[in-house]
Length: 211
Image 1 (tube, rainbow, N blue to C red):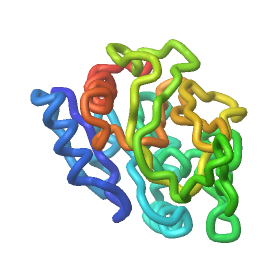
Image 2 (tube, one colour):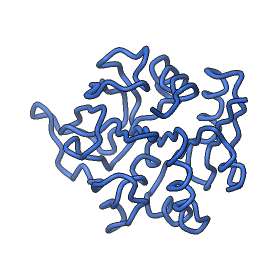
Image 3 (cartoon, one colour):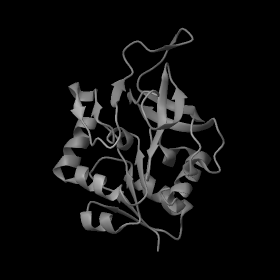
């Protein structure tokens, strides 16, 4: 049976993500767990995340999940969501600077206090629906139209100039909406809140081989 483990370190929309996965992959065994052994046994792993990166990384380090994420991402599909994506980079500017897991090169930046688009000041956090340009053909985009809309909630972002970007969007500047390398795919938006396109992405993940 296809098993999908959602890593529970106390930070993330765990219930919403698990329910969305169960909806699109009814034959999969979906478990929300902080048990490292069960995470190692899973066929696929999801790293969610909401809130401050300092708090997320504190719990990830405390539970040893930084090394666990490095381990399991080597040989099976892994999906990072929102702060779960940011945690995969090397460093974040948030909370006066926080070192992250480091599976992807690059730094997470703050939008800044004065963010404008077409001379209109934009609110931070960025909260709402944005079109995502698929900058690289990838199996996780299967069945999803280019420029499909996804739901974002974040005050910090990964620049689109960062290596491994496979999807990008605009909010005062061009930023990474998705990054990928080998068996890892991570998104800044919330697929579990993104209606049809988000559910399609989760469905793709449930069957993706990681290649």
